[in-house]
Length: 205
Figure 1 (tube, one colour):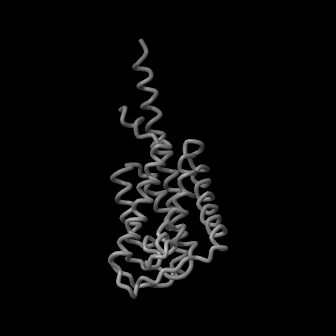
Figure 2 (spheres, rainbow, N blue to C red):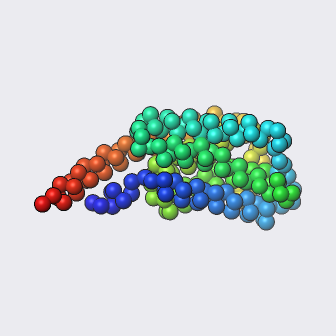
Figure 3 (cartoon, one colour):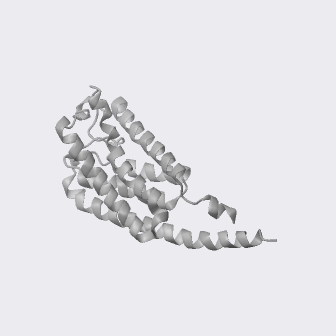
């Protein structure tokens, strides 16, 4: 029974999720730098004067999604309210080589392969379904806000296609995923609280 309480979401879990996610973004970026053909390494930097606005746009939308989660679950969902906008911004770590003057692919971690990999790794390491749903929501929300090209199967395949036809589906799934995460939190909370009360009663003399 104690395992139910141990699995309650904490800011330590949030920090671990951020580290795992950032590591995966950088890993996908490195794979693209090393293995992509030169013809695919055409990623460019965003104009410096547009970066703050873009970061605010990403973080703001992530925060809106997080607040939607809080509406579903309440204060116990606050760690995820923090996690969502940060994850939404962190996906852009895959532009790092271009800012360092290193040739790279376009948005190497903005891919469906990355989404599947991130979900699998967080499921194994974090073991919170609501965190998986937040990772899905944050990643697709970011991709739904972006414009231009992406490689859906990066780093397996670097054929680029426009993001625009996928923006609405990505944003719809992002919204559905975050509300599903809220309901998972509520369902798990309903299970944990009776267990906690039972343990408290059993400790009485």
